[in-house]
Image (cartoon, rainbow, N blue to C red; front, side, top):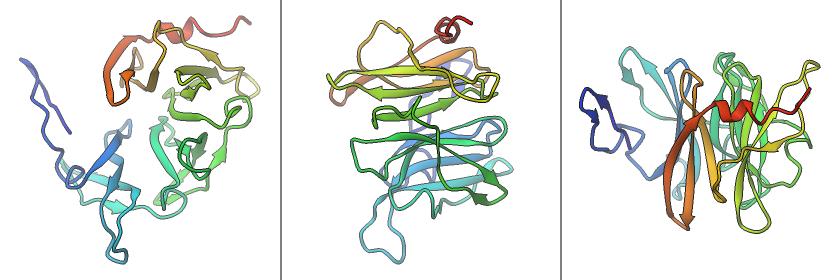
Length: 219
């Protein structure tokens, strides 16, 4: 779906052109506004049975080009949810272990080519239930969701250290017990997330991104 911001506020949501032609979810637009990644149940010519795969659209002028089915390492059904730094490094959830599992990985983009998944390591991927990464635009920290054993989910943050490694992850205290899908505003000043009251019933919230810095471990 897409909603447009005008002088009178947000327009009523409508189905997004091209991306919304088939059932889909988790849309992501790159920081420069020219790359659109999303998951979609849309058929391939060589496949009679569509799967939930990753598709991409490039922007040409003011228009989005037709969706293109991405190959390896994204498909078939190998990843979900995207974030990208200003350097063009992608971060996604590796779901090759099966539904209900996940780990945070990065992907380098070189022109039209993508690297294989790069595991961010055990400091972040400690339980096998780490999903929905959101990288700071300067890659100084990463946010992600961890599904807890009691059914809750929390948003964690890990900071990039001087030696290039990630710090021990800490929970961002949002005062809610089932939060997920962190996103940053384009200027990095606000954190958006979802709160699920019960299955399939949730809302979108936002908060000052200063709450992220407040979680930074003492030096």
